[in-house]
Length: 389
Image 1 (cartoon, one colour):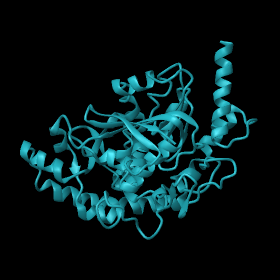
Image 2: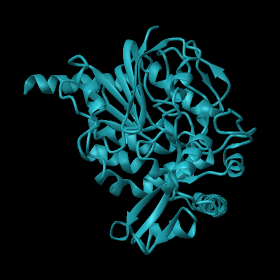
Image 3: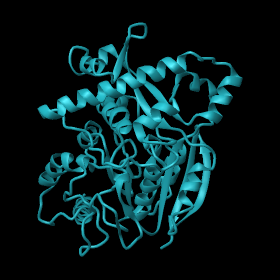
Image 4: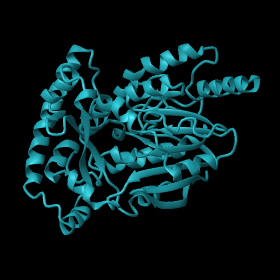
């Protein structure tokens, strides 16, 4: 018991060091800081969680700056509207129900975590409800997620977790022994943001550290699933993200603000306008795609080849939804719709599903990491990287 307490204190000290917190801050104070700085993290303003490679380096600023490690901190750190609305806000809304469905561990992920050396520090980027945090009792885990409600669930389970963005992880370089990103990158809408997220995972592990990444595949083991997804029209992707395909990096000429906080009056107006604007485009997209809703095998196979951008529905049962409150507001703002036949609120989540070889191509430009394993598992493309420099 004494050894466990000492190890816990050691890890807490290491975490404070990684996040640039003075060592005398108490655990309670640390937890308070994590949650109270959510606004700073989400709006891109500098905070105590800003990344730095060493104590002497300047904290990351949202401008065209290149660090000593060759990472460019530019507009990729600013979240496109489609992610803010159809990823961040949706997961905030469905967090409790989503969490109740996320408990089974994937065997390949479990095997990776079990293979780590005793005492390893594992960073889980996009930890969700924390189902992998603490999985290997011989290792130490720190999680982060963009969704405050999901991070709150992690904290309630006694895990170390904080609110952070996958393209700007709040850890010192070389801090962890391993990192995992499970079903996260497919929620990023541009190639540059997906590559930046991988660069961040590599940056935060030590030399020789391992990184496991899994993403949804366009080559689904059950092709019928695609008939339940809404392929996004190129026209509306251009409006949401910028000219050209999300696989081609064409950033807007201005910076997009991150999610407004709901308790601020001005932000409530902004959220309503943004949701109505995107909701109107979503209705058009749904109408366009429903005209050719053929679920035959041939059509589904062709859809696999032609589309990688989808809205994937999440059905929030009425008995789990606050129909008179936030859910009613979500319907009014176009973020969700009611499905009386299924007795559920339907939220659409944005996905970029990966084709074979796409994940490897993103890694090919990262000079300090090599692929040591790659595999297809449960309709996911997966790779394991090793940091070499």
